[in-house]
Structures are given as C-alpha cells and as structure tokens.
Length: 97
Image (cartoon, rainbow, N blue to C red; front, side):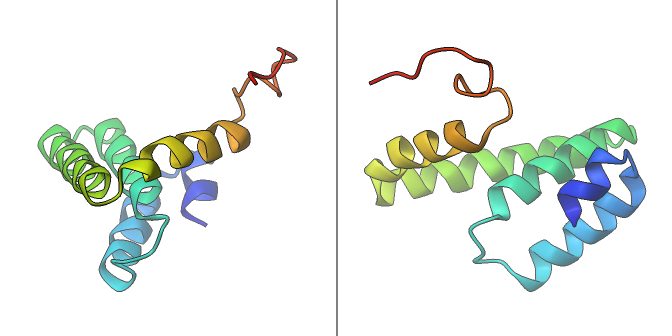
C-alpha cells in the first residue's frame, strides 16, 4: 500500500502510512524499502532534515545487518536486482552468470 501511495505521488499520506508501518512492524523485512520511500516522500514535501534522518537510519540499519550477516548483502542485492524494474532482464540485456 505504501508503495502504491508513493507511486500516486500522495506524499502526505505516504508519510503517514509509512510512519505507522515503521511503528507497528519494526522487524519486518520491508522496513528498508518503507524507510527509503518515507525519506523520498519527506524530501518531496520539503522536510529535508526529517528525510535525512530516515536515510541515516536506513544506512545504519543496513550496515548493522551486513556486520551480523555479510552474505545477506550479496544475496539481498541479487534478490533486489531480479525484482527491480530496471534490472538487466527487464531492459532486454543478457543476464550475468
């Protein structure tokens, strides 16, 4: 739902829903994406300090995740590439081995 709101450029509602999500589901695997969407929406609304805070929290949490489980970075990046709309397979480029 948060991703849909962001794609509709409903920034204020995206911020509200993202903040509720972060509060109620702090251990969910979608937290990094939600935090990124929140930061982007805050920036679009001109709330730059709050946006930067979310970016820093995102970077810190991901850095901690990599320290605890380094292979997550590699497998997580591969998983994101396969579902990303700009991944090589969706652009018609050959896949890497």
